[in-house]
Length: 368
Ligand code: NDP
Image (cartoon, rainbow, N blue to C red):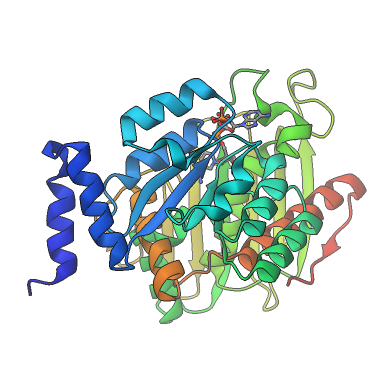
């Protein structure tokens, strides 16, 4: 069938050779149609660059604005992506975005500690917000962000790109249809060996913690969507081999366990001190699923007791932004939620893990 969407996909595939001016007019056509999500990226660092590149292949989302504290980046991005001066902001001027009809959503990709303020300001400007993970430093901040977005009448989504990844969703589908039987156990191992000791990820004031905030969150979020239930308790243990690099409050390695209402247990490892660690294993009474790599940029690889998972790889951020356009513009519901409430549960678990590390005791969870 020759649908409008197919047509737009073909046009998008051919854009490599189309000059920027034509691209802008194409965007205007789509925007008039109400089908294109116009996105301003805030914090033009490593991840924003990846999202911007991936959005070039989107059919329902387009980069139309930027917010940055670095004037030279604004110039570079304007040239690269054809962003007009009127859609460029600094952190001082960005509240004025509320008067800009070319922007539907602000995508916050600043360091973790800035998410709370950035999201609340974007919401107050009347824009939907996509915020990177972790949504905030703790559950208290997360609740304030959700309340601010609700009060402003805007939606808050979080950049959980794995929630749209085809092999991951196939495992979720198989679990929901009972193909693994009763789920008994999940193992999530997420980590990498972090470099430069001066980076913000190793600064508690900007990162809010260490590996758990940055990479361990994939294991705990994964435990929830792979098991398909919410945990009711957590235990956790921290080990540190380099107290100079990983200062007080910046965790190097944490192992944590999550208990689920029906007795299922998840055992997870979060670390900044080991490479080759990106693996999920789900075990049920009738079968298993294994993803390795499980949360990297892909291709994700995996198999179940029924054989290899063969869903094709698509750039995660392209899929995420098109799917988020569907959520924000068409009211679509994702299979695995990506809203603020979903992210708040992760923050509640993170709070509990740090508490369990500190006290050495099991912490009960009451999520929501
Ligand atoms: P970077 O350090 O590469 O970029 C952060 C950007 O934020 C900077 O380039 C800067 O942009 C801006 N910024 C504003 N204030 C500060 C400050 N005080 N210190 C440093 N930067 C500042 O970080 P990443 O892009 O790697 O990470 C950003 C966010 O994205 C984090 O929350 C991280 O967890 C998340 N992330 C998510 C990933 C995913 O797969 N979902 C992968 C990687 C990161 P400018 O100069 O334009 O102001």
